[in-house]
Image (cartoon, rainbow over all chains, first blue to last red; front, side, top):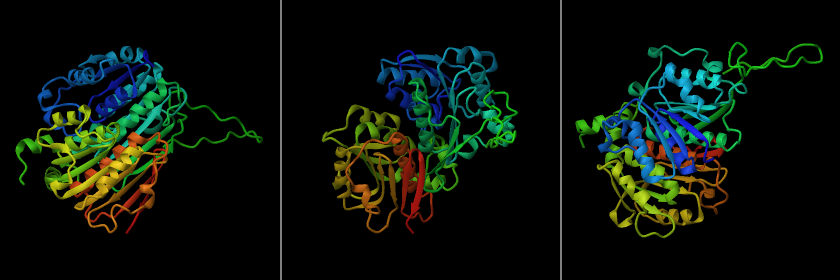
Length: 241
Length: 201
């Protein structure tokens, strides 16, 4: 455990609760990447930052919070965006990746980089009163492209800036992402590998978990042809979500 | 209460969520709440209530401490506009009590709050397996006893305990903000991380 390295991409509504939960659970080596400074509008849900942190790079404010409360945690900071030019190098030196971004393009970059590495990761998304999470074990379980195929146009998706976000909803998904990371680095099977969890808080909290099958046309390598049955026919695989 | 420009900017991402709006934020800022449970279980819910701008939060930490442990008191640093104090019934009405029950000590602390006379709404979370949340809006009869099992002895901890606590916090947030027009009492039962919801009309 002490040597396992976890990379958190994004230190916003998801990354902050993930970081809090990881530190509490005993993670010892965390790498933080986020290009943004703390803004006043972050403080309602990113509950490690204080008013005096506004303008400070999130990675610096988060590292300071960690060091004050969990001095045994080794923190590496990258105040930059994850991009095609740096993703492979960063992912390669980590044992698990937490996708805590809100950009579809970055989510697909994390997916593709982790599949190639191969490094397991947990996807997370939250907007308004809903959130999702799914863990990907490269070559074994369905990946993000098995589910969504291609990134949506940026103007097709609602961001938190437009649709809003509620702190505890993001907090629940971030907590879950941290729990998945801890299971993986402890050599346990993550609960959401090959499954997607959906949380809908618009009514009394409804949480569903659905299996996600690898897609035959996806290049992630998780899809395996089913053996032929007694009549020589292939058993059909259920389609992806 | 009229929101200032700084408050609108600070809480903008939750204000723009449909059915919260400025009125919901004003309710959050004006709310008087109580939070009870073990320090480790209420630290994150407290941080989110403070962050959201819930005006006054009385905290009852399980285990008999008279003050607030350091990690709980540290939540004050997150939002100068929120008051975090030791829970005290003599301070009068409580708009919502959020009780996080993860141990026998927490159950006893919760029972103390249940004895308060002026609590309008309740959210009670059981973190022992399989996990359960009772959501009891203001005015519901028999509060907070909508489900007798909520008062049972505390068993082994659910693997989803932290997740359950956060869902309970979300339910508390919604009740305080007036998110649903006429919310009904509900029991959220967990099977691992999945839930089944029983609504009591």
